[in-house]
Every structure is written in C-alpha cells, then in structure tokens.
Amino acid sequence: MTMIRILLIVLAMPANAQTFQDGLIQLREVLKNPCQYSSSMDYAVARNKALIQLHVIRLNSDIEAIQKEVVPTSEKSAWMSEAKQIRINDKKSLIARLQRIDLHEGLITEPSIFKILEGDTESTDGAWDCKNVPIDNVYRVIVADNNLKQGQKMWQEGTLSDISNAFFAALEIQADLPLHESQDLSVQFAKPQLQGHDGTCVPMGVLSDLGTFLNTPTQENARGLMNASLALERKLLHSPDFNELAGSPGKVTDENSYPVLSREAHSNDYSTLLKDYKEPGAMGIYSVASPLVLLGSTPLETLAGKIRVEKFVGLKLIQVFAGDPEIWRRANMVRAALDKDVPLIVMFATDVRERPLEDWIIPDNTGKHIGHVLNVIGYGKSISPLTLKPEPYFLVRDSFVEKPVHYRMPAEMFVENMLGLFKITKIKNEANGATK
Image (cartoon, rainbow, N blue to C red; front, side, top):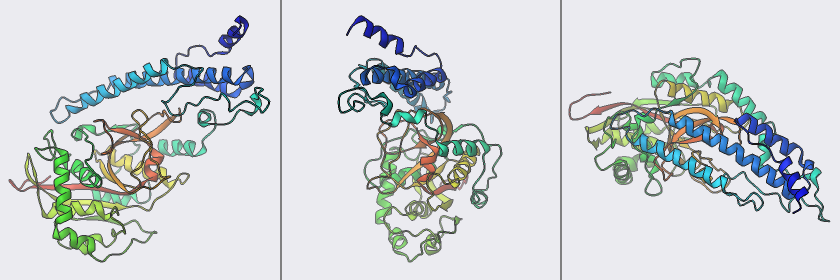
C-alpha cells in the first residue's frame, strides 16, 4: 500500500468520539457516503471502526450504570453482588475483544450486527460500486423504524390496555400514573438458576413467584430452587388431582374475551378453574394454573414451614403482533403492575431464542418451538446492542440462561410473545396459620 493510499484511509477514518451521539453521527456519515472511499475494503474498515467505537462507548456507559446500582445487604439478595460483577466483567471482556479485531479481515463475531462487505460490494468487473452498497443489519441505525417510534411515544404516554381494569381489580391494585421511568424488583428473588430439563420452567416460574413472599435466601426450600421445582414437577405428573385436572372437559376461550381468573386456590372445583383456560397441548395456559392449584391442595416444604397457596390471579391473552398499538398498551399494563411491586409469572409463546446478546435475550419465533414460562420483574429503557437505539425493555428472570443474572428483552418482542399473566396473591403458613 502506498503512502498516499494510507494517508487517504486515515483521513477518511472517523475520529474517536466522546459520546454515543457523536459516535452515531460519525457512523451515519460513513454509511451515507460510501463513495468517499476508494474500495469496498476501505469502506468496510471505516464502517467497522465506527461501529466498534460506538459499541465501546455504549458498553462503557453500561458499565458505569451497573456500578451505580445499589445492592441491598440482606441475605436473600446477596447473589445480586455476584450478578452485578458478572455483568461488568462480561462487558469489559467484550470491549477487549472488540479492540483486538482486525478491521481488514472482518473477524467480528460479537456483536452479531457486524458484517464485512468485502466481495459483496464489487461489481462484476471488479470495480468498487459505491452507489449500490447492499443494505444489511447495520442500516438499522439510520433507517427510521416507525413501529419503534410509535412504541416509544406510547411507552412515554403510559396508555393502558382496556383489559387492565379487570386484571388490576383481581390483583387488588390500582395503577398510578404517570408510570415510572424504570423498575427493578430483583431484590424480591433468590439467585436465578438454569432449569434441569424440559418442562421445569413451569414449576421454576411458579416457585420463583412464591419465593417473593419468603425471606429465606434459598427461597423455596433448603435444597434450593432446582430441587423444589423438580419435586413440584413430580407431584404434578403423579398427582391424581392433576390427572383429573388435565383430563377435565373445558372450552377454548372466545378470542374476543379476556377472562380474568381470581379464586381460592384450594377449591376442589377444578372444572370451573379451567373452564376458560383449557388449551390443547402440554404447554397450554392451564400448565401454569395446574401447579398453583396443586400448591393450594398440597403445601410445599420450605425453610419457613409448610406453605400453601391460598389465592392466585390469572389473565389469558390473545396474542398480538408487531405494529399493533395494543402491544404498547399491554406493555404499560405490565409496567403499572411492576410499579406496585407486583412481579408476574408469564406464559410465553416460544422457548427459542437467539444466543443471548450481552445481557439481552432476543426471542425467536421463526422455527419449531413450544411454550415457555418466565417471570417479568422490571423494566427500563436502554440502548440496544441489536439496533443501537434507545429501546424500551422488560427485565426477565429466565430458567434457560446459564449465568445467575436477570436479562433484558426488547419490550415489543416480550409483549408479542405474552400469552398469559399469573400472580400468587395470598399464601398461608400451615405451621402457624399466618397468611400474607
């Protein structure tokens, strides 16, 4: 490479930006004007450098925000210090990997939006066709996303879904408007764990919610969350009550109605319970109601004594999809519950997701999948590593992840997969008769 060529590349490269907005402006200038570069390689190098710089700024900002998080000193929340350090170390490790990348060879595997353009942008005669650069994922940072803009506005306004009133009445809460900017109820939960095998997500989600009533650090049971969830799963599979429950006649809910279920969990009227919740398939909405019913008739051994579920609330939802304003109204309904310190069990449409991108989970509905259960425990707004835009997210407690942390999920994707919401609202300690 001649000295003149080297000089031209250096002059065309973006200078180091100090803020995320500065870095975004520099990246857009590269993307909007590919003809300022003499070859596809020069363009790709400049683009990758600008992208890396932008992500390093974002990651450093994330690290600063995590470092400011205050971890309570209670025994139950001690795991949060470990989770905080894991998130910081992961982001520092990613910064180090990004800074070691060879910009010419494009050896970029994280974040996933990076792609080298060498070869793709050459014309058939080998010339640099700068006027016909193919559009790829990185253009998300310069192309207007009307769905996201609409969602941002509705998220900011806090408009609630029409089904909120019935749901909140059953929960015995009332929405306070305006909604908060963010919420994190991690302190109510014990350390997250990876589920043991298929199907365990249901008892893990239920027991995580039950654990918010208890003060013991291992939450449900001296043997820990996993053993308790496996024990509950065995009870579900072998309980005569559950067999009767699963085989009882029922009807699929009319798609124009949104039934709210609020009842005494220890009632024996299983057919009434499932009348509006019966679904075909093992992961229907009743799969969450079933363990709640079982915990109403069979108490669970915990460090605090034998605990029985006295009452729970359930809401079945008809699925809505991207572009429907109802997505954001439902998002605000969930936010309003979280603002009242009420985390929720979520019946989720898919158990498939892309590989976790940093501390974000991206659900995937494109392939074969079954339902899933997780807990929603918070929300906020942050720059997404996928879109490089400020994006509303929900904080979820998921049994499919290997690290003991809570993950963010884009709010629109979260609500799009939301099929049902449940919440334990009353428990009883069989040893002393205390309820709460």
